[in-house]
Amino acid sequence: MRGYSVKRITVLIELLLLCFVALGASGARATQQPKTRPINYERWGFKIDVPSTSVKQSLPGEGAVELWELFTFGDLIFSVKLSKTPPETLTATAIEQAIQAQSAAASSVGGAKRWELESPTGDLFKGLTGPLPRDETAPDAPYLKRSLGSREAYRSLCMAAAGDESSPTVTLSVTGPKSRSEEVEDLAKFFAFGFSHKKGTEPFLPSLQPSAPAVTPKKGSVPFLRPAKLKKGDIELIGRVESIDAGNKSLNMVVDRIRMPHTGYITLDPPRRKIVYYKKPLPDGIDAESPISVIGFNTGVGNPITAEIVERN
Image (cartoon, rainbow, N blue to C red):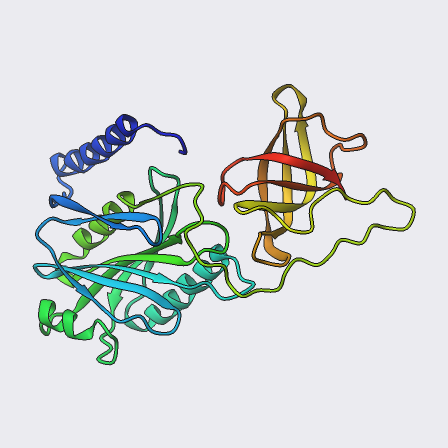
């Protein structure tokens, strides 16, 4: 969905709103969306929309948490949290592990259901909705008690990468009384739908991770031309070719490992498919099943990449 105009995004939002209106007309419960105001986080390069009359509360960052803010709106609490990704771990992997852990924990209070949503700027959110067991030691416990009293809590949260493959994780959530469970999930999805961040930027401080190992060519082979260090914003993909479309100057590859400017090589488990566009003719000997290395500007998970360098490994 990259490159959508403001007009196109506005049309998408209107269509989504019409879907909820249609649900109401058909007898299903429709959620009334509040008027919103934008909140910009320039340091991290992203924006969210929160209810216009909500009241902000900032919680102290502890451990991996770099940012945590609550926006109370009646008996609902909108939350945005930014957490560091562990070294040598892909953000997508960290998100999936967190979702699975929380899903397992929710089994003791009736279970939770998963959902996914892609924002207009192409950010894939993985979500989880279900009852929320009260934890009086949690930093947000006093605010939950103030908004919900003794009522049973219900939360819908979702997570996405706040940048490239090793960026922090942004977690958006809406918490309210269980009696408003359907509204809580609807509002969480609208919350995620309004998220956007600046593509092509690298606002995050590099993690202290080992530098990329030097590439030693096999005896008798031509040394690789790939650089020992990548430029800011670049990524290296290592894997094999699935198919080549010479007419469109593109190929499909299965990526087994990646490398970024501030990381060593990271193994993908499971491997991912990637569409690669190339500007120059492919080197001789590259065809289906060829092992290759691709270097280009990092466009994020799930998006095609335009290669500056394509080499056979």
